[in-house]
Image (cartoon, rainbow, N blue to C red; front, top):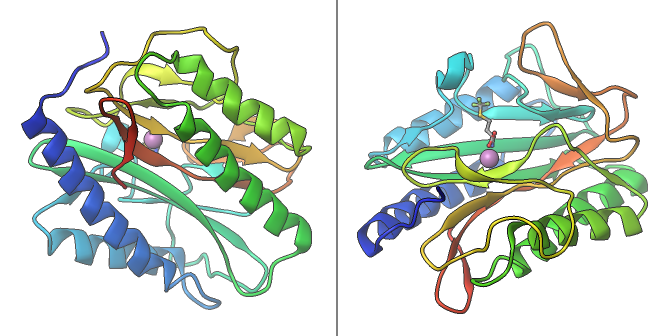
Length: 247
Ligand code: MF3
Ligand code: CO
């Protein structure tokens, strides 16, 4: 069952989303050469705890950190480290989950560190565009895979590939709820969307093939061909006739 959330529940998700958005803005100013990914995590921790919220990934299924920092060929679930220092030309994806009064929001963004290559810039912009295309389809009466298809067709028509091993998801009383929201699919397939649903839509876009593998730490997902990967995610609420981005 896809949970339907009442007004009070949606307001708590909005609050979680607002705090997350502010956190992302703070971190975006620190994605500069010389910063360690651990420093990004500490900055997120400091800010979120000052807002009576918490970082939802902390300890989630044993995840050994509080946010995910995924650099260059890392697709998702990168673990922040003081040994990992951002350098000019990197792309860095930051993925944050926030819990506020028992309700969740989830978002990710990929940032350029200094001057990045033209191809990297195009990858990041296509991944961000794919998220927008998906969000446009998140309307009451549409099917889940209308979102999936919008993402996939935009990415592939730009010559890149969507990751299939990880998917977006419902969100609300837990960080992961039904339904799964794949980044590939066919129009008019999957569950029908209704007002009161909340979704985390999150295209992961690879410059090379869609194949990924998990490193020995059990978390870090990398492209098997070593090519770059970008990730954008928003939490959205399906309202009456429209979609509301809460992050
Ligand atoms: N945004 C990611 C997701 O929805 C969060 C990863 S969860 C963690 O799957 F385990 F890495 F914390
Ligand atoms: Co997510």
